[in-house]
Image (cartoon, rainbow, N blue to C red; front, side, top):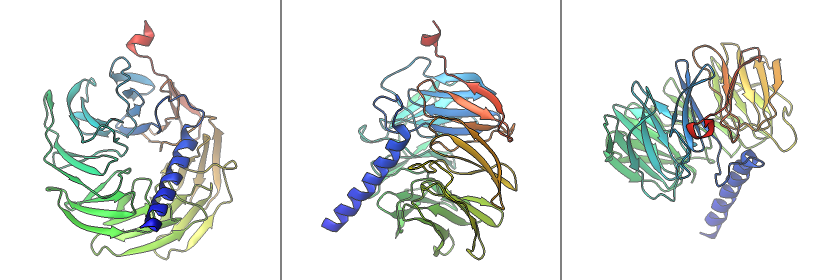
Amino acid sequence: MKQNKILTFTLLLLCVIAVSACTNGSALTGNSSWPGLASEGSIVYAANGSFVEAVQDGQKVWSYPETANNKLSFFAAPAVDETHVYAGTYTNQIHILNKEDGTLAASAEVGNNKNKIIASPILDEGNVIVLSSGGMVSSYPTTVSGETLTPNWQVTLSGELWVKPVCYDGTLYIASMDKKMNLLDAATGEVKQTIDISGAIMSDPVLSDGKLYFSTLAKEVEEMDLATLERRVMLTTDGEIWASPLLMGDKLIAADMNGIVYCVDTASDEVLWKTEKLTAEKFGFIASPVALDEATFFLVDETGEIMTYDLEGKSVGQRTLSQTVCTTPVIPENGSLVLLPVSTDGQIKAYTPDLKEDWVYTRTTEKESK
């Protein structure tokens, strides 16, 4: 029991150190995370402190709420469907916003308000699945109209929940911070199975062709076959891994917290190449790599150093942002690279694939503009 407590304390300490690295020096008073970012079509949705904002080509579409509310704090990347945007708060609430204008359609308290929603919600069969840091998983209907939501089901797992779940063939795959992969029936919430894994998963698992790929703080990238639940270690890295792996055809890209990038052949697990340390001392990669096209991918480290590489491991371009970045970038349909730095003014920056500045958005609320 004592050994388990020591391991748990060590894990939590590692998480605090990593989070602190991305918030140190910022003025996000009272907060302890970095902003979340999602995109659909040409619009990006930013969950950043007191606001959720929809931005298109550098112009504000809407902001929720219209003026700052110190009781609200958003950091989980929103989920988006045809009619709504789903945003979780740092006081354990889910806010469902009308996609057209950002007005509130419905909300719910997800258990104890001392817990937080850190993971992005997911949508499945007319329901939104919401994870609380306290271990609670909740399913709510997405058909709402000005009401307080009642859950279809709720279940509490054994560990904290920080990363986005995956739904495949009616089963939810939920990684918990006590180094477990929890399999739940998506319709009922029944826990089907719990699988021990080697290390805590700090970023969203990646689903591809019936297989789940995930990185861990145990310095490994694993593949899990969802048909058989068999697992294999595809890569062992020099440093802990926070960022999700990136699949590009028959290659897997991983970036660790030591600032090293790896390329693995997915069939043989052969390491095709690895870089030297690409980041400044004591810094690495928190944001996950993103594919630009079939042959090129994009990276940004904690200090805001932007890099593009090809699948042969050759540098294609580099640019210095000089702002803390821990949020995984998104690429809306116009092909811009959209980054969300840690800032107090809600700044969002977009670049062309050759790293030229495309547009910059800086938050202006109704209160600030007067």
